[in-house]
Image 1 (cartoon, rainbow, N blue to C red):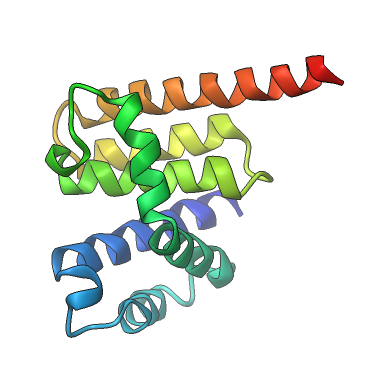
Image 2 (cartoon, rainbow, N blue to C red):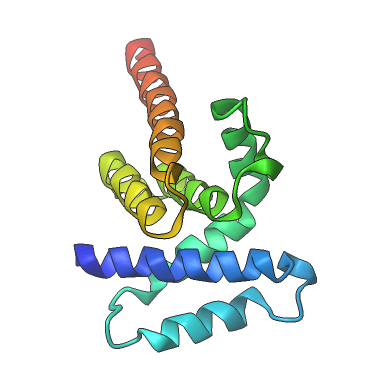
Length: 150
């Protein structure tokens, strides 16, 4: 199932990248048509298609929120200046960290780093790892604060 999820994340990344590249909601192609076509290409290899759809629609629904998280974590890089592929990898990972709690955080970060190595520039994986490491620390600190308050 793990490698299946890895392929699912690749399909989600591919879908979100194409959608963003074509102009997002102003594009002549709907997000639904793009992810359906991409999932169809790998339907024999992806058992959990709902996972892919959840990632794609979740990132799309929460893009503004996710970009708001990215901004303070990478203050030297305004969100609109981050390479498109890196930004989408970050959005995917942050969505999973915040909205798919069943996936262990270290798995999410490792998967994002692997996606950055495969599809990003030479330094993308280091950038992604640094931003997500900072995000995880904030999440863990909030969790510890809530625990201590009880």
